[in-house]
Length: 240
Length: 232
Image (cartoon, rainbow over all chains, first blue to last red; front, side, top):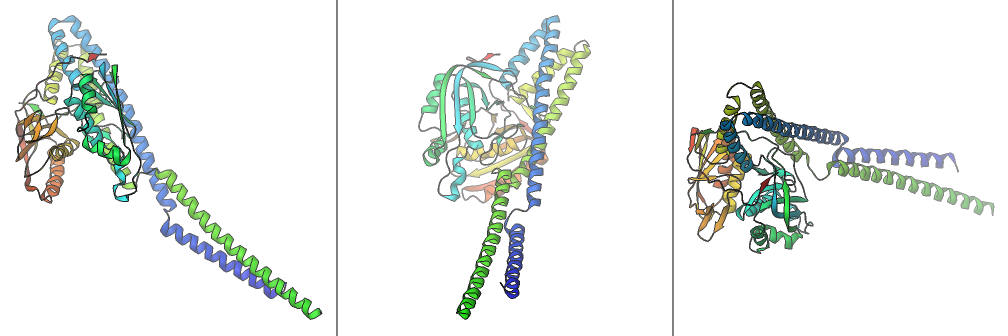
């Protein structure tokens, strides 16, 4: 092989390598998510994880404080009949507000994501969303539920549902995603009949057909619901 | 003969050079492809289906949620300290305050406070539309809500009937006047976005809101006694 040939091979190699690096750099800079973006994304994920850890710790502390307050109130109630009467009233109100764990007969409902449809415009339809959960909660309350929890989060009179496709945010809790388990204690037969009614929950039924969204339920003789463990502050509301 | 041999040798060198060039180019193309595939895989592993904007909203929500939890924790700690003080009547005062707060929260008594009043007049709006509006307000920090003199708390059914929308079995015909108590600034922000969106809807004749220093809600709900549920 002559020097000329070796030189030409070296030239081709240098040009091709340079082209490869330029191409790779161009693609990385313009078409791909840059490492900076990935780092930023990872920082956001870490923030979410830290905030969720704080959230869980705060909720544990709130549950602990409520238990301690309950014990102190019981001690005081043991010393006075008037205090005992007041405590009974408050206990009843707390039970209706979801602040006390309860159990009883009811239904267990499970809602799972379906499969994405071929139409890109309707992709979110296969995901469980907060309206689905709210529709089910409303239906169950309307049909005799006395208490409801959603994936371990107790529903209260102040409960707000929000979220984006595939994520369900309830009150101050972290986002929930499929599968969502709803437990409802109350009139089991009425609730089951309502869930079996094909005219109820029209949006979920339509997506069961279109996206194979999963909705299953079963009655149970005894279900346990946890107490609410978040904030029930109403600083702007005053009794009239 | 020697000339032919020389010619073959030259031809062989050229084809080897071409071969090496082709391999080099192929190698570099493969390198670029590998970089691209690895970068995409890295992105897919870390994104797990959530975009950056959604994460930012999530962080905002969690900050707000944690602030609310912090306020609740402080309030409970204060209550605990009052009870631990053991002063005469401390427990009665704590229990009375708690009963009043829970009655207001559960919609059992009339309430007042700062907030907003929204009016929506439309033809053909359904229970889903009203439920959406109530959801937005609840997520915007509503602490008490009334629609056309019907108190709304979670669990009170908002349903579509043949005659129109009903709340707890009572028909609420448009125009809907939605009175909301809560943080007026936050509620005004939510109401502003809602009215803007509603005005773009052809079914809507009117969508307005006003901020009020004192919104009065006199409607109440009746407490339903538990029949099936037992306290744990």
